[in-house]
Amino acid sequence: MPRAEWLAGAVRAPPARYAKRVQAVFVHHTDSPNSYDCADAPRIIRYLYAGQTEGRQWDDIGYNFLVDRCGTVYEGRAGGIDRAVVGAHTQGFNRGSVGIAAIGTFTAGVPVPKAMTDAVAALVAWKLGLSDVDPRSTVRMVSSHSLSKYQAGTSGYFSAVSGHNDGYYTQCPGAALTAALPAIRERAARLQSR
Image 1 (cartoon, one colour):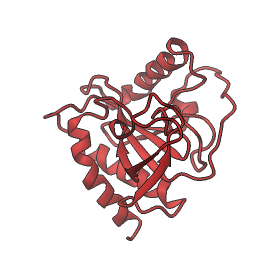
Image 2 (cartoon, one colour):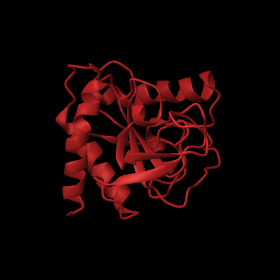
Image 3 (cartoon, rainbow, N blue to C red):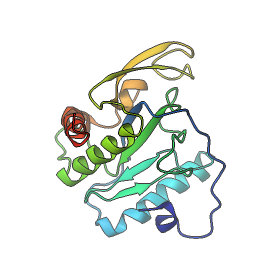
Image 4 (cartoon, one colour):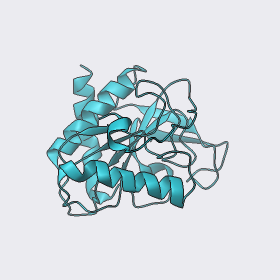
C-alpha cells in the first residue's frame, strides 16, 4: 500500500537520502497491540508516524516498510520503494539497509501470523534481489553511530536478514519474531530461486 493511502492529509515528503545499494534487512516489531483488525492498520501506522515525526522530531517514519498481520505490505519512509532509501530504524546501520516493521508485539510465546512472515519473506526476496543479495548470506557493515552495538567506524557482520537487536541494544523484534528469521531467510532465498 503506497504511503499516500495510509498517510491521510497533505503531508509533504521530506527529501530522501540514498545509499548506493541495499545489502541487509533489519526486522522490527512496532511494540503495539496484536489484536487489531487489519482494516485498522493504516490508523496504527499513522500513530507510529506521529510518534516518530512529532514526538521524536524525525523528518519521516523510520521504517522503510511495515507489514500487518494479514500480510499487507505498506510503504513507509518516502523516497521510492525500489531505491536504497536511508531509513531511521537501526541506529548505526541505516545506510545500505532496509527496515521492515511487523505491526504488533512478538515477545516469547506470541504467535507470529504466517501471512505476516510470508509477506516479510516476499518483501525481503524482492528488495535484496534488486542488489543480488542472497538472504542467507552474511554481510559486513560499518557502524556510523557509537550508540549501536558497535563503535562508529567499526565493522559488524550480520545475516543479510537480521533482527533490530543484532545491531542495537533492544529486545526488538521480540523473541518470537527473532525465532522466525531463519525460516524467513530460507523462504526468501527460495523466492529468489536460490
